[in-house]
Length: 112
Image (cartoon, rainbow, N blue to C red; front, side, top):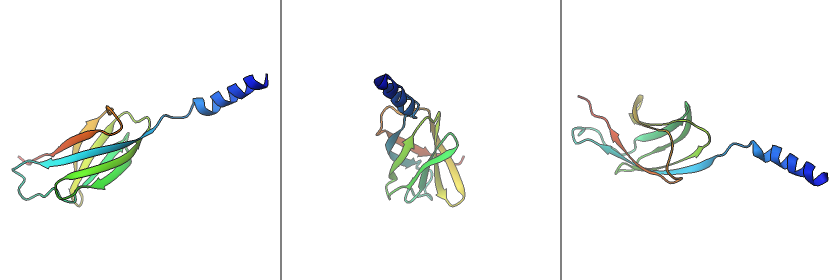
């Protein structure tokens, strides 16, 4: 009886915990050749999951960045870039990642 009670208590304690893991995303921010005036150096890149900010970093001089964030039960991940203070550019929306260390390329849109 005591063993059964222990099993039930452990199932209740750990059975309903949310599954989460740390995502280590390697990204590359690429600008189109028409965007001569814009540098890809020190652009803020951020990710939001279901409306809340999960992670933020900035690019190096070549547009490369690493972004660490916790993935729980978010339905959608949206990536944004902030090239100029106050200007936020939507980059891409993702519903899931193939592994815990994805590699992604993001393109800055151009003005037409």
